[in-house]
Image 1 (tube, rainbow, N blue to C red):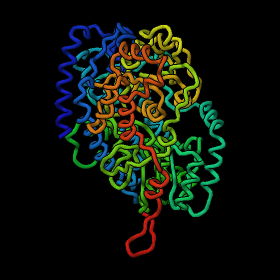
Image 2: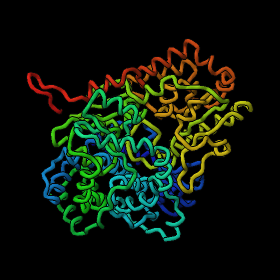
Image 3: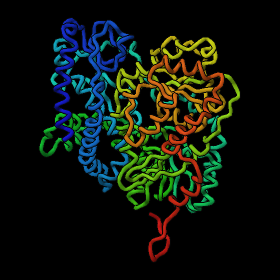
Image 4: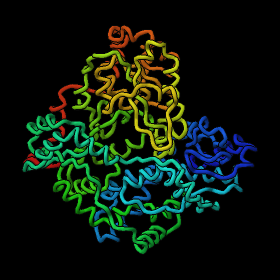
Length: 606
């Protein structure tokens, strides 16, 4: 059983950590929960050792890559058990009869992250108690219910949210805690994971005409199928698809925030906690802890603000119908609409909108969108409940590279600090492993010859407050604002620092590309290994930054000819067949989405 494996792993890790830290923990001034802890503190595996040499950093448990699959499986099973307990309580509170399946569609994208975080942080609290039992645990006392599902997930990425959650976990594991001073809280670096008002305004300005066309299309009468979320389709593509599937309409695309729910109702929260604690106590310590925490972690939108949320879903979308959605995220309003559609007996289709799906050996996001009772339209990956079809986005990108300048565009990964706090178990860098991946790109930059270096530009992600990137990367010219594809389309070459969406985009575009990452931190599904292996053999993918730099130095002057060599052409074709199918996507999607005719009867919606 996964729970048995997880308990055994916890015991083994605590012993290994105690041995690794040794006497260094005896003089720790505190147990710190920040990404940037004070000197002399004991820090977790989210701390970058190179930035904080005066911190005693616990070894990263996820260096044991074999443990990730068992923990992901365990987190999913626990998510299912918790949802089964929460659903009847919420139905009772709201006088509804939605049931577990309905509530799962609303809550899963939030609850799965919460469970993974509790598993990870509980392990830290157990280990810190064994390693530095007398050191005070510095916490925040402000674990308050978030407004929305998205706010709940975003809080898990902040130092303040981390300290508040760990205060509750510390008490549940028998630790004493010490509130941080106001000055310490002010000085702590906090991740702003939500989109700023300025960013929203810029998005509206760039995509305003497309949004207006979609709004007009969405008002056409006779909707039987709704397109929702990040389907990566343009208005022109939607119009072409409507001609083949007359009942299809895009749902409105709104940049505004979800409705603001009322403040937390302590009486209602106590009722929720009491209901969740009824019945036999759980023998699983993580489940028991999660039950106690749910009363403070459950977003107000689905408890105090549920009537407002239900009305917002009806206003924003349409009556229940077949629905095709790009992405299952912590989006309160959208998830209520999806749940209503499924409850009314309509068909639910998820549409791939990123490169990591069906690629990583472990990916908890696959759980959310490749699920029983729905179909996942993939870019090429196959599996149960999956339809591998040509898709508009890869098709639009296919061979669209038009080299018009000398620049070599480097695409960095998400800032390591956004990945430092584990929020899901997946075959990707977890915790402070992400800092090492960023340094690969920095070492590549330093190793490149002067001519290569002059041509490098960096496609940056915004850094959270208090963070810095390696100096070698910070010194590079910045690619102008906009998505990576706009720059890759005209670049002489591309250097991609991770095998996710930008690498798939670059391969589809046909820009001569070098991939640079640590394969041991990006484990692949067995059916995905061959295309990547072929690209490694062709000199496209590297784990060593010095070898990658030597390859770029050698070929950038003849990049187009190098990219047309038979070995690379063959390897790229194999990759695209698996990760970016192109073709008559309109016909393929229309055949899947249009209402189907029941045998011997009239057409029906499914």
